[in-house]
Length: 256
Image (tube, rainbow, N blue to C red; front, side, top):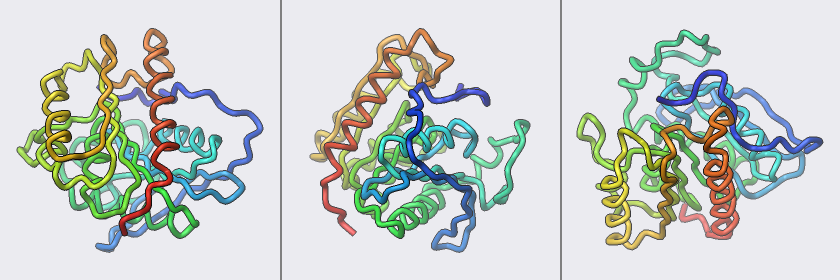
């Protein structure tokens, strides 16, 4: 399962932080328009993240997460996957997302990631990371093969192997990944096994890709959620690692 619709990130709000936010409609290079949500510190910064949601696309959890990044001095854009098939309007809780997920492709998602990156670069952001969850975790890592000049790619409980339609995953495309990788995996994930994670580790090592794979033993898929109080320690550690990864690699020069 992915997040419940009333889920919120298990990240403390920084009260009084000077941030701005806005709903966006961005345009990809292929002409697609899609919804996005941007949050940024009031003062200009040169580090940013593109947030790739789970299978349901853009909704409150990811807007809140963008705000949490902005409160910590990181510009953020959370994107939606379904502009091509569902338009850019806000959607209700009864949105039937899977039929839209099935119509996405790696190329279409990367076109939209490129537009979000372009938006951040237009705001003066120099070092850009992708951060994804579930479906978005996989596509975050694949973004490192997208020619975007990323400073790094972070994925929470993403599938590293082949897709259900046998499309190559990050493990199969490890030699194409041109940015450091952070994988934050759930040890009790019913669909992503320890063998899957080990194979990803081996593929990244063989390809010479700088990486870290962290597995939270006993944690289920989508543990990064305030309602999952029993996994609060894992969530706090994952958030700390993500911020540390961004800080460590933010001086990495862009390749494009």
